[in-house]
Structures are given as structure tokens and as C-alpha cells.
Image (cartoon, rainbow, N blue to C red):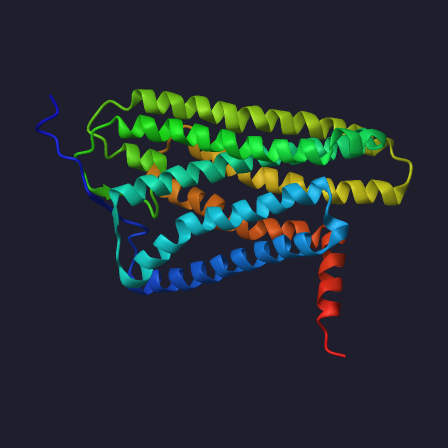
Length: 310
């Protein structure tokens, strides 16, 4: 029945389709942002590992977030830079599907880790006397492992649903990486099941977790307002506002990307939104946590002081 259909072996990532001079400029800007992403998250990961004072559940999950941000950017940005530098826009279809799979894994894992981090802050502020019991290392390890495992399984479901389709062209993806909605446009088969599963997954990993985060922070806000000490209230606001900024950036861009009604120029908007959670969010996360977190800044100062020559 499908004998007259041929599977494509490679696809062309059209990228930003700008003038060569503008593409050269974008390459320089994106390279700089990518370097800052790796450096910032690498520093966060390093000081959490090296400083025993940061060996707490909050920073355990923050280390996972830093690792995710580096992996997330590294999955998408290098190919984009290659396309801008040497104009090599072709990518094998197998590599394209692998990029899609890893993109889904890292995105879903970050959603779940952000939810667990909000629960950690809820327990720390609303139930401080029971914090060490509720957020034991066993609970933290199981929570992190479950987040990763669920993400690999959910991404595998999407991959299997993609592999059941026939791909016979066109051979071009109007994006800078193999984003799942763009890949589905290559199929010469009915993709309604894929679309339904994507929407259901968005409800499960975006809307549901975001509601849990908002419920946690509504309880946290009530608890903070009850704190008598001004210093205690300031410290609680500082740690929670950092996490809330990251949640807003990540969930906001993802929900607009996958659940908002499509405009007249959806593909160009998708590229811009994808830049937010592929490059800008991973770069901003370490800045948000380091600039608004006294413990991280203190640990960084101690690390730099130890390396200062006598």
C-alpha cells in the first residue's frame, strides 16, 4: 500500500534564512550566549558539587536543572551554529529524530524538576520542622530519578508515534533544529493521533505541573506573610522569587509555543519562542539563581578566594 512512498534519508534545516552578513552576526551572538550558558551552568554545577554547605535538597535539584540546561542547549544550538557558519543545513533523518527525542526528554525533565523544586520550597517554608524528614535524600533521589524516567518514557511514546508515519517529503524543515511539530509536517500521512498525544502531553507536563507550582506558591506566600522577622521574610522571598522567575520563563514560553492558537506566521514565531527555551532560558537560569541567592554568591566568593595567589 505504501510501496510508492520513499523514506527520506536527510532533511534541510532552513534556519533563519537571513542575509549572509546578518547570519554571521547571529552566529557570533548565539556563540557568545551558548558559551555563557555552558560557563554559567558549569559554574553552578561545580560549586554545588565542591561546597559541602550546598549539599542540600534545594541545590541537589538545582544541579539537575543546571545539567539539563547545558544538555538542552547542546542538543539544539551546535547544529544551528554549524548552519550559520558553513551553511551546512542538511542533517540525516536518523539524527533529526534523535535530536527530537532528546529535546523532548530534556524539556519534560525540566518541567518535572521545576515542580519538585517548588514542592521543596513549600516544605522548607510551610513545614520547616519536618523538612529533613519529608525531603530526605531518599525522597530527593527517587524524585529526580522518577522525573528522568518518566521523561524518557514519554519522549519514547512520541518517537514511536513518529516512526509509524511515512515520510516522503518535503525535505525541508523551516526551523533551526528538529522540533517535533516541524518534523510532523514532513509526514505524508495522517498526524492527528500525534497532535492529540502532543496536546495531552502538554496538559500533563505543562498545565498540570504549572497548577501544582501555583498552588505551592500560594501556600508559600501565605506562610511568608506570617513570618514576623523582616530578615526571615526577605530570605524566603529571595530564594522563592528566583525559582518563580525560572518557572515563569520556561512554562510561559512552552505554553505559548504548544497550546496557544496559531497566528498567521506560526513558523517564524516558533523559531523565536524556541530560542527562549533552547538558549535564553538556559543562559538566564544561572544568572537568576546566582544574583538572587546569597548562598550561591557566598560559595562562589569562597571558591575564588581559595584560588587567589598569596
